Image (cartoon, rainbow, N blue to C red):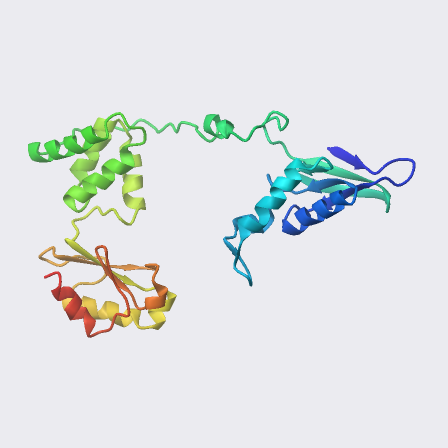
Length: 296
């Protein structure tokens, strides 16, 4: 707990501004320039409020940070402004001009008077960087062909000695095979000394990975709101009829894989379809066979 008092023997020039958003920041600057001692209070770790999360401001489209940054600098330099963060107002007692505010301040776990903003505390934090201990798993003999062993060994050698190499290794294996073979995952787990459960956790989390063989060309039909109302569902059905498969499967000749996505970032060109890295906007039913013919 801490207290902010306005004086015991009459009014003094001290003001408490509750809320460190752009309005509170400007109020604190105006009051300080008028000769008041200002305490700027916010319950977040830093001041700035919602504006610090914005790119542009309505209706002028001015840069939010360009608007806020000069005020942040002025507040940091002003001798009559004291910033109090991670604190809440518990109670206010007294009368206007002669009051006492009781605050509840949450711990920051660093000494604010020594902090330089270097960020080293986050790097060395034992909680954020805790080492996860996985239960010991039963060792299973890995059976992998000599050809596949050589291919995976080449990928592992490429990332040898790199910290956190599991994800890029999986990306390279997926790129080499078009999917993640079970034997390759078990071999990576063994060679990297990483629990197989963690390997499968990553392999099943990212949509870019597949545990089953996938067609050489991946077709993704957007079914987001904009594309759906413009006929995205009919586009998907046209691809399914043409390829004789349903979404989530590959053709028998492993030439095409068909998937659905919620957004491709091209809502203004809906309905949108992507084939590998190529984007096709304003897709129509007539364009479906034309698109497939380009990759036959």
